[in-house]
Image (cartoon, rainbow, N blue to C red; front, side):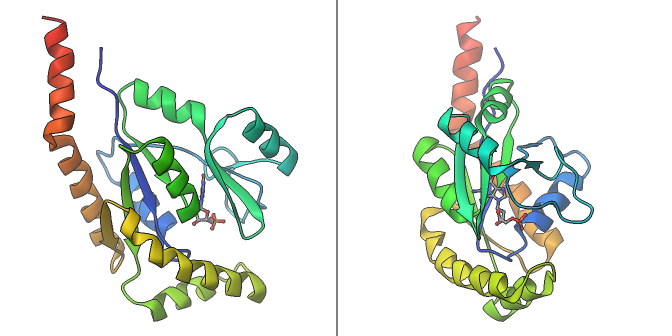
Amino acid sequence: MSRRGLLFILSGPSGVGKGTVRKALFEKEGNELKYSVSMTTRNMRDGEVDGVDYFFRSREEFERLIEEGKMLEHAEYVGNYYGTPLDYVNQTLDQGYDVFLEIEVQGAMKVKEKVPNGIFIFLTPPDLGELKARIIGRGTDEMSVIEERMEVAKQEIEMMSHYDYAVVNDKIELAVERIEHIIESEHLKVSNVLAHYKEMMKEW
Ligand code: 5GP
């Protein structure tokens, strides 16, 4: 039997660059992580593809999936639902792959309740002025949405204490490298290595 994969959760305040860092991590050669594509009720942005960037679904369908217990977590963020489909995560971990979630803070805290041995990585802004510039600079949102995202971001920064690692997003490549180091270190933890050896010894 192959060992179960590890669950990594990248989260952090709105506008910190979680999506950009996650994409850069997955574009790197040799990446063996499996990305869990989230579901959302928000409108598709230019260039986004259903099933790749998100599963874009109606509110009705999303609510039905919540009721059926099909979401590992979900959160309402700036008027839309976002959530992680449960089956993909479970099946992929069972196959021995590491699964990577990139989600906002409320959702990450719900994952923590359900999967306490997940590895929680908080992406931090190098400074708050830059965070504000990024939220405004995204350019796809109205002013009221930008203000709401700023307010949410302030509250989210206070959540850092609940995480295992803090990664500063000063430069994308550096943030990616730090995350790679975390992944490598987690695999070298005795608790994870020992579980693997115990499995192997059962087969002796
Ligand atoms: P955006 O609308 O900019 O794509 O994403 C908005 C926020 O939703 C980002 O902070 C992103 O990390 C978060 N997000 C994306 N997928 C999920 C998910 O499955 N669950 C939760 N809770 N947040 C998500």
